[in-house]
Length: 159
Length: 159
DNA sequence: AAAAATAGGACAGTGATGTTGACGTATTAA
DNA sequence: TTAATACGTCAACATCACTGTCCTATTTTT
Image (cartoon, rainbow over all chains, first blue to last red; front, top):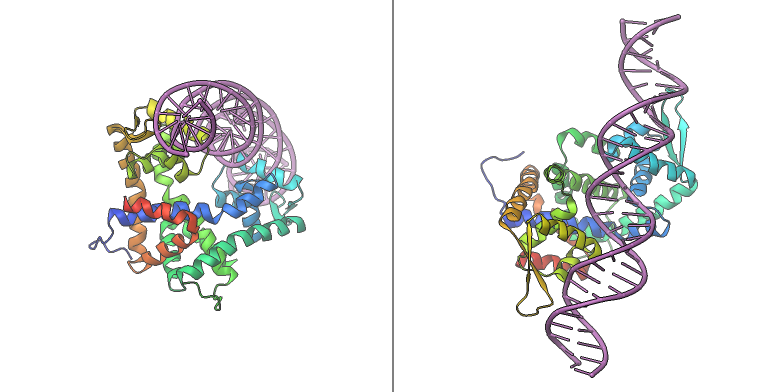
């Protein structure tokens, strides 16, 4: 846990961490952004495709919590994705108020391609940084997430 | 360096890396985003304040390269920042076509507060993750950046 | 059975941030 | 003198987010 006595991190260490995550994230998504743009879609669409692929059958509320946007904002994106036949909404049998989200075949194909874009870049980075570096990368990023949301993010992996 | 033989990274490792950087970055900037919103500013303004603070006297072309946006887009943001008296443009003595960018006192004060927001979150994360984790965090993020841009990012630290 | 809470959708207006494209001007370099 | 460079600017438009309000269907509570 956090050690309140030792403060081994200089301003330069902090600035480095800020700049690297900013540039790193933007490079990570670059190829996927281009593929999306070619289809007339944006990152907002990708995030929906990603999470629906990750947790097929999740409902709108759960997706809203993950994305941390308003339902009006999600509604537009979701409408476009269903119109294009990339995402499907099915009424839940347990609670007929809920709409469960699934990718169509076409949606899954696009998501796979987009995942490939991210994956090839990140695999290369893992490889270049070395196996020992990866747990540290995970640890700092995990610690950036507030306790409140950490369970939600962990749950993605458990699914 | 990259080992072309071993491929020790599963899809789950990759997904984890994607999700953590997405949620981690959004948590990192949360407090700063709120401070900006309270002033009627956005992340675009913050990025300018950040880089001008980091490299006082950089010119518009250099800033465009760092931000990777069009000059029309930057122009609006820069105009707002100068109007509010947060950023100052001075004509370069060496090349009078160039405008060199500096923070005003007020601009520097705001940037300091915003940096404090990022810094306190990231310091806490470094601390929680442990000193050993930080170099791994840096290494993976650095490797995410294309060789082309890596020199540019490194140059920020050297300044 | 009636009332209240929940899940979700819809309409209207607005703002921040980005884009392309075209054009202009001052300054420096060839 | 010509060409390239470093800006700045006007116009139109797209994406993605927001607030606020109102509505329906369904489930839960009382």
